[in-house]
Image (cartoon, rainbow, N blue to C red; front, side, top):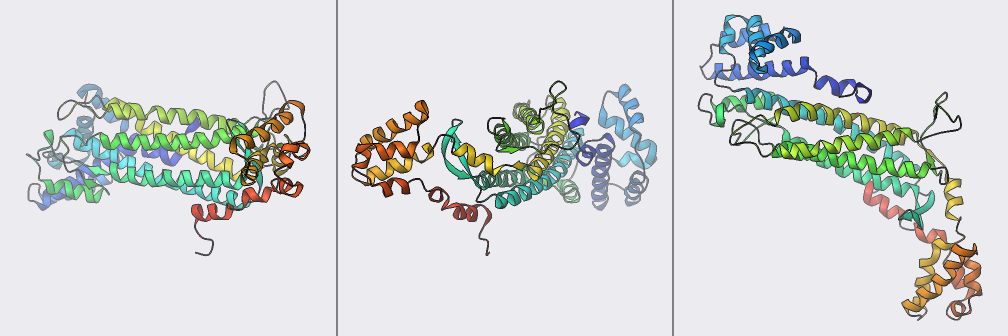
Length: 437
């Protein structure tokens, strides 16, 4: 985790202090359940909560013990015993390390998910506001980077809204899938601990009991979770890339907000670079890179090995912290994005009417010209615009073969911009719902 790309709420989830607090809660809730079953004295369970609950776990002390034991959970339990006293002998009854580690990891992932869901809500709100602001701001659509047909800038943002709305739904599902608890003991058979303990801990920690844990929670759950984060990151990059293209000097239809006092280049004082969206592109690459090791973690040996452990110690914090930062940054970019409708109009008209070629083509076919002949007639006039900087409408009006099929009014009517935006409201209703609902 790089502090430059981290925000405090998400970072806190992955702190050592937070982890040890979750470990304690898992162990203490298990003791409560064991006390109800008569395995642990009720007084001991109460003492564990009283002393451990009030304690500030000493991370340096736990690290010191681990240097000797070479085992992080044992180091924590040893330190807990120093705090609790003799009653600590009832802690971890019938449990194994993975019961603590996996349950804790899933608690952290669900808490991280809640922050990411809030991030997505903020981004969706910004996209919706700006989409309605520019619902009717006509701009040129591009395919292969080349002028295609008119659209609106609001539709571009509505598309992004719909995409991130799908991302949110996927994250809700991924959160539910990873929110499982395993307190099943060695090889997951419950031989030394009652399944009711697992059910109790799961309920207290906001998780569901893992049906079959084999000593560990199956890692297909985590693979899906990190794959979902990777998809969200890809959507971040898609929108960031669009903004980067629109900010290019020769396009300049939209631009990241440039703050007073901000500098774009150490060498060239005139520069206003899309640094935020370039940064988002890089961050998205990193989040995507964590999906593959998560998938490779699925194939562990038999009931358990720890080849996944080192991976998850890295990708758990890094993926969630990085995506949290990226979503927050993207929200800021959208919220303050500078939009230039006049530049959009200027760029759209740069090739003097070419964007209406399909309408002319369709008009000719409706006038009983074969599609092949209609395409040939339109393309030969379009090429004059590309190669000789001619005016498309003028060339069409002067083309006797075109005029044989279409009147001047017919041709001019195909250049109506409103034709291309007549269903914008319909699309907005599909994305955002009826304005009267």
